[in-house]
Amino acid sequence: MADMPIAVQGVLPALAVGVGGMLAGRACAGVISRYAGLIEKGRNVDRSTLHLALFSGLGPSRHLAPARPRSKLFCSLAMGAVLSALHGQAGLVPAFWVLALAAAMLLLLAGIDMRVSLLPDALTLPLMWLGLLAAWAGLGISLHDAFAGVVSGFLFLAALAHGFRWLRGRQGIGGGDIKLLAALGAWIGWQDLAWVLLTASSLGIAYAMLRQRRLLPRGAYPFGPSLALGGMAVFMQGTAVHSWFS
View 1 (cartoon, one colour):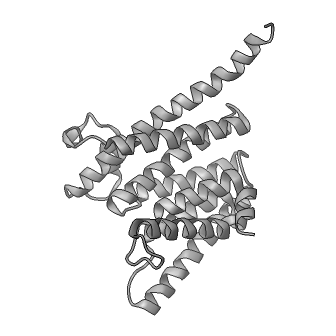
View 2 (tube, one colour; view 1 turned 45 degrees about the vertical axis):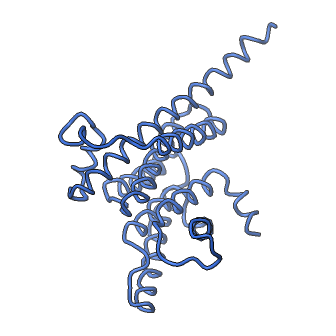
View 3 (cartoon, rainbow, N blue to C red; view 1 turned 30 degrees about the vertical axis):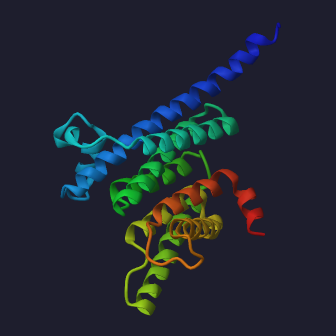
């Protein structure tokens, strides 16, 4: 009984983080819905559109349809789980808040790409710079590894996209995907980018197979959600990801 207050003190922060993550995820679902609605109404893919989606009380975004219940549930559970896992690994240290912001940006990118097949620079570039800033501040990998991750991620996927276009005569990898992998490189470093791509490709293929219910799916699907999930998996559970493919 004497230990009860200590136990409660340990549970309350974790519970608050989980609930806060779910609320943040619900808010992200709203931003995704408003951004997609604005793009579908003909708005430009620029920073002002993202700002309009973020601040829902301004301009025409308040007249857009709200987020779908399924989207709210998924985003809430995803952010709640990710923030709880981050809190369990390190607690409420400064790096936690930086990683929480990065996780929210990844969720926005994945959701927007699923809705309108876009990965806006207004999110991918800040995610990259935030990763480099975190490395400079000593909150993650070294700045050298972060910079190498950005360069190698960009160049590798750009070369792959160019090769695909040369072989098939059409675009298979978008510029947003290239910038997203570069941004992930700022957080993960160059060493694990191959694992990110392997995980993302496996997830993308599995999703297409389930969606079409066939072993050899056809057509194209947004790659951003798979990249975001693959990057998060490698960042948080790199050893487990390595074992899955070994």
